[in-house]
Length: 293
Image (cartoon, rainbow, N blue to C red; front, side, top):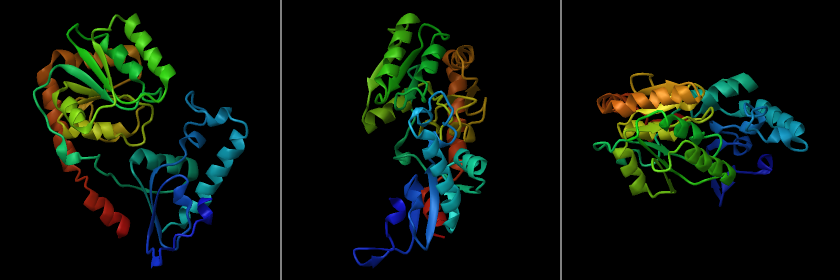
């Protein structure tokens, strides 16, 4: 369907450049096309035989996977230039399709509005709630910290079965009074939660980019992530701007305990994180310049 679209003009005006972002829109034909790939169809690639993958279990799944991979390999090279929104996405494109691309980082939403205040001692996990984001690792990590430590989880649930399993885990570990679920919060409340937390916990599975990491750095907060979390690892330096743990209970407990007992260390990591973000020169001006060059 995307190949059938004609975007050489719109309402009588010539479209002089087409910028493709996500599958399958980046396959649209255009004589002057540049790609900035935010992610391919992950279920056809690195998630194919992953426990969280679903295409592999669908009727016709293998045929669909092969068609997607064939189209990407044949049609992505027709672009004048190919960018990816992270090194992680670029690595996948090279691994599965044999295609080169250039990482091009962009700021998170409302990047200039994040701020930092004295922390209230809680850990913050702001994200959609689903098995790929692994909120359960944050809960397990909290169990290894002191009784005064708390975890605030905000974001909409995309998987009620997984959300229920998190609630069961909270009860099992005796953390009912220390874990708070806020659901979706507004922008002002989100900024306040970042500003006053001790640290941000963000241990997803092989994230494409990970806005949460950049938001934490802008708010001068350290990040606890995992060695297999993908995108966040491109920005964090272990022991300097955050902590990288193995994706298992004991390692998460050890990492979160370090920051729970040492607010001075957490604050220093947070300041280093903001400095590291600013040093990268991540701006929309740079993104637009590169895409229109």
